[in-house]
Image (cartoon, rainbow over all chains, first blue to last red; front, side):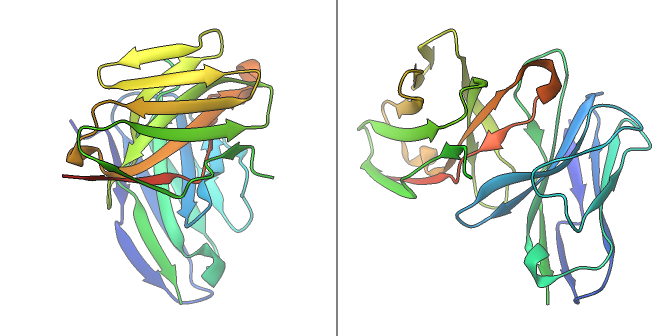
Length: 113
Length: 115
């Protein structure tokens, strides 16, 4: 049972480079979320999606774009990486009918130098 | 503006004793609260939750208490075990249907349980 899978697990980028983080879930969940975790800040919502083809901004969306072309996948893009985007990124999903408990992926540790 | 706050960055307890983790919130629209547990190099996992219509919810060794007037909740772990050593995040949701289940997280508290 895979749950939520994030790729890659680690990445080092140079300032100005671009990359895409992939999140895939096999639970047929409608809602998907991207969070970043920084020391002393907890988890902060970047973008979220309530269904295939829909996306919305969260608390800290600047510098990121997302797409949800298929229900099971939620992509997070960094067009021009900055050192301030060094963080651990978590994807999560949940069903819209069964409570608020998220299923999280294991995270992507991104370093921008 | 931090709407969910965990003011204790860390907590150390002896095995077998009670662990009490605290969380405060400022947004009166929050109506559902959760606790997540996170081990290093893993994603957070759901632990226990409580609706604002209740003041207590229990699941085995874990109990969450909600004091709405004080906008405060706490997680009690009794008895604490070394395997409970992890980071604990408090989270809150609310605002009705348009919230789409978005959670606002606290900063986390590192719990260390000593044998």
